[in-house]
Image: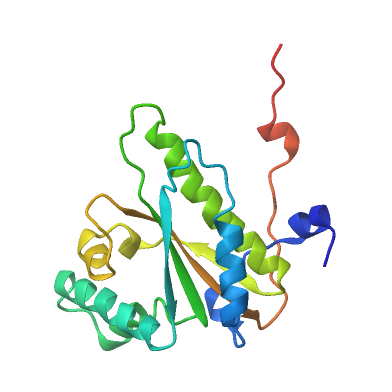
Length: 188
């Protein structure tokens, strides 16, 4: 297993179209979700949950996405509808991280939302540590209540991200990162 700091420094997002088989096995997925759940969680509220899309479930979810898109875009051509239909079928596995942050007398909702984001990032990092590639995506359908209802989210739940996981077909491309002097200040 790579050194933790080396792993974090090497982590890159992999485009979903570049994620192929094999995806995580059932025991690997259990390990990934266990690691994803080991995040700061003030008050032990577990303000997030996971929805796993694998096999034919990816296509069923894609059909729901495409139907909502078609309802809003009745003149959409078949190629565009095919893109919408395959949104969750581009990688062998997709895990939706669902934020279920809610009003609480002691724990601010913002902290709960951040906990869901931490769960998503732990999942991405753990996938990378296992030798898989991953990409955290939120596209239009992550914010459309009709799609969310069809995916089984309650009215008070939101998508923190869809995490696409698979084996990278090629090494991920790096991108420029901001120079520290542009993002770091020192107080005092």
